[in-house]
Length: 414
Image 1 (spheres, rainbow, N blue to C red):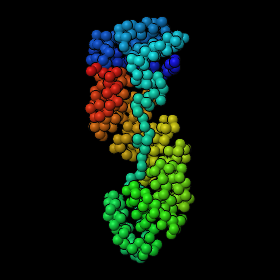
Image 2: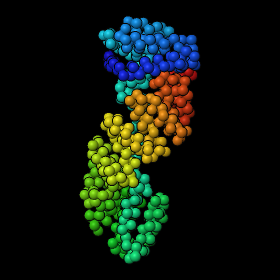
Image 3: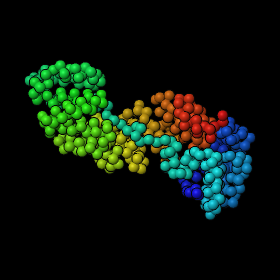
Image 4: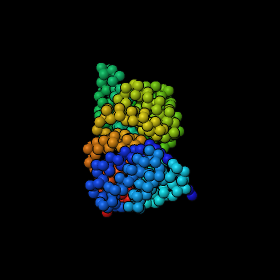
């Protein structure tokens, strides 16, 4: 089976610029860059590669081949040299020979094709291990309970001071995730005697049960609410949330739709429906829901920006994703996941210096982030700074990242 050759001038030029700079400033006097190098040949090898790419750019393919052949003769295990030679041969029509060089490069180092972008964006996503799901934002307890705070503010405290105080006490317990005391408070009062406020107490009880993952009891409470008032919007919102948590996204969407038909200002429902739409692959609908929250300047706006950015990334809208994540970072500058997400994007498009800045910040926020060290190492590898990369890979491995060890076996001296 033949290996597909894709000539990628963009990455080739980047590699040339990197090699040119490094060869002049670092390689001649540096320590070994990888376990296949020696201090005697590493500078000469990379000068050969620099000259090869320079000749290639000036259309002198014969001299380009001579320089890269010299590098390979000095070190036959230099996987990058085979990639460069494959590109030169592909350009002059030596397709079968180019395929062989790519096969050799891949055999010498199964990570090198992805690392230098020769398998495109998908290859770079694979090596940096991008997962949109990993950072997708959910509403925390305080954000979820904000709906009930709005309802409390509408209570006439002069006529209903007892109810007002009870609901305030209950919300305080829920905000602090004191589930047991919250249930006890509700059970200790006569909810049926609360007249117009009966649904609020039952609804909060269902909320607590959902947070405890007791969906069966929660559904019993929700069905009781429906029997009292089937047009109570929060009951359908709660039913939707249960179905979403259980992975029943189609049914969850139906319930969110019903909740929003009854109350179009139910911001949390837009947020969670966006998550469901994303799960169902309906990315445009997900973005519309998040747009609504952002345009409303709601308190959940930061999470909406984050999720919209991640959805744009999933749909291939890299510039839109970068814009949303940058806004999110401005609003939430201590969120390590935002820097990692944006760093991933910069890495994927080959902007290694900006990616480095984000991973540096992520490490400043959490010096034990094995993921940040690993991804910063990939940037250094792409910039051919093997010493720094190997230090980061070793740190990531020490923190428990086994994949870092796999990469070290191909780029670092034991």
